[in-house]
Image (tube, rainbow, N blue to C red; front, side, top):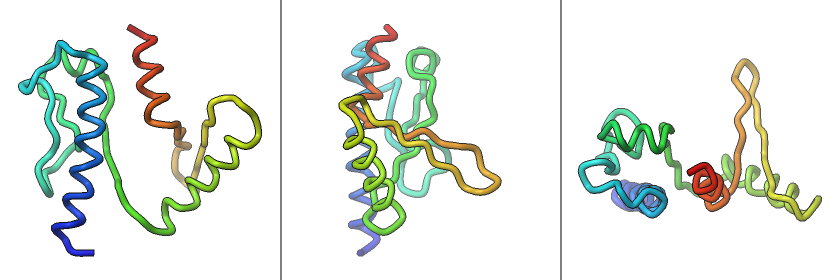
Length: 116
């Protein structure tokens, strides 16, 4: 995959997340939230105001890729979905690393909406 295509694919996911945050908190404007530039340090979604950081207290890193690294995660999420009609939660862990919880993006934003 060409570098330009890779960057466009990453920006696409960043824009989806940014739009969901804006929909959740309509008080946020262009001065409050933006996506990172290519190879910019820090989080992929830049919460640039105190208000945005208070409303959405997360550091967002996005990865939009095809390959074996993520394929198994999706396989495990499908497996969790098959077990029951409840919302799937995937917990992963590597040696010497902290466990991570993975949930569906839309479900995550529904949880944020309920907290308002």
